[in-house]
Image 1: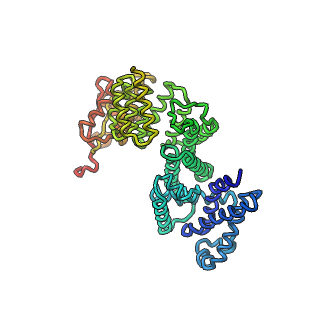
Image 2 (image 1 turned 45 degrees about the vertical axis):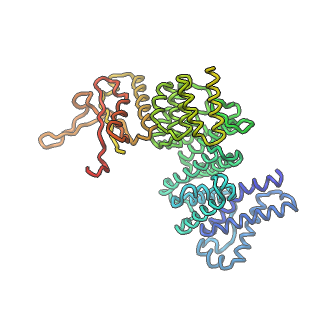
Image 3 (image 1 turned 180 degrees about the horizontal axis):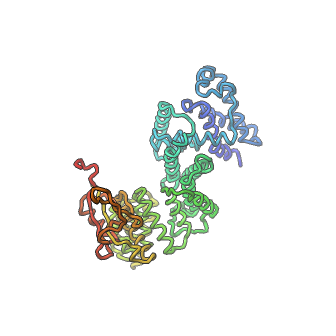
Length: 411
Length: 120
C-alpha cells in the first residue's frame, strides 16, 4: 500500500482505537482531548512519513507516538494531570502508561459504543458520534452521509457530547442487569448505520460500502465479546453478512441499480453467505426470536436464487411474524410481494389495495407489478403514479423501464 | 382509533382434522393476521390450546373444578386477536377474513376493548 492510501486506511482503523482508549483513560468529559491527541498523531505520521518513508510497522509507530503525545500533553498540562486526572481515574496517578494492547482496545471500543449509544441522546446523534469516534469519519463525511451541512453535524455532535458530560455518563460496561436493555439501543444504532449505507440510493457508492463495513466491524466486536455474544447480536451480524453479499451484484457498470431478480448470482459473495449462515446458526441458541432473527432468515432465503413454493412460503410466514413485532411500510410492501409469490396475484392485489400507502412510489411500483399481466391498463396507471412520486433519477429510470417493457408486450 | 378483540369460537381442530389440514389452517390464520398487521392494525393475540383446559365454577358455595371442553363444542374459545379499527364495522371486516369461519357453525365475536376509554 502506498502512503497515499495507507494513511486514510490507518486513520479509519486506528483513529477510533486510539481515541477510545484515551477517552476511557480521561473520562467522557475530556473526549475532545482524546480526539485531539489522536488527530495529532496522524498529523505527525503525515509529516514524518512523507520525508522518512513508511516505517516497518506503521500501527506500532502510531501507538508509540500516541503514547508519547499523551505523556507530553500531561506534562504540559500540569493542572490537568495533577488536579483533574487523579480524580477521574485513580489508577492513572501512578503511571501515565497508555495501554494499547489488543484486549484494552476492544474493551475500550465496546465501552465507548455503549456510552455513545446512551438512551439519553437522540438516535441520529448516536449514529453521528459513533461514526466520528468509532469509525473515524470526518465531519464532512458524516454531513455527506446524512445529506446535511457540516454546521448541522457539528452542532448535533456538540450537543450530544454536552449531554453525555451533563449526565455524567461513565465509559464503562453497563451492569449485567442493565446490559440487555442498553444492548437494544446499541443494536438499533448499528442496524441504522448499516441501513444508512445499504438502502439510501443518493449517496456515493464508496461512502455506502464504508458505512456498511463499519457497522459490520462494530457488530462483530460485540458478537466476539463474552458479555455481548448474544443470539440477537449474532442474528444482526448474520443479517449484515447476507445483505452485503450482494453488494457487487447490485449495480451495473453505469452505476445503475440492478434489481434482485435480474442480478447475476455468480457475483454474490459466497464467503459472506457462509459467514452469515454460521452466525445465524449461532443465533438460534436460546428461545428468543428477535426481529433480527426474522430479518436475517428472510435475508438467508434471498441468498437462494431459484424460486420455489417453499422459499416464498417461508419468506411470507417470516414477514407475517415480523409485522407482528414491528410495523413499517417497507416491511408491509415486501410482505405483500411475498404474498403474491406464495398465494398468487389475485389474493395479493386485494391485500395491496388495502395498504393505501399512496404517498410512496414503491407502493405503486408493487401494485403495477401485481396488475401486470392481470390488468395492463391498471398496471400502466400505477407505474405512472409511481413515476410522478419518485424522487431520485435512478428510481425514475427503473420505473420508466417498467413502463416501456409493458408497452412492448402490448404492441 | 379504538381497539377490538376478535374472539374465535370453534371446534377443537385436533379432533376433526388431519395434521396436514391443521397445518393448512395454521398457515391461513397466520396469513390472515399478516394481512391485518400489514395495514398496521394488529395489536396482539394468541391461540388458547384445548389440552389441559379447566373450568372453575361454584357448587354449594365452594369452587368446583372440571376439565374442558365446555358445553356445546362450537362455543369454545380457541383464541383471540386484538386489532385497531376506526369503527366496529372495520373490525367486523377484519373478522370476516378469519379462516375459522370455514367451519360451519364456528363464529367470531367482535368486542370493543374498554381499557383507556375513560368509562370502564
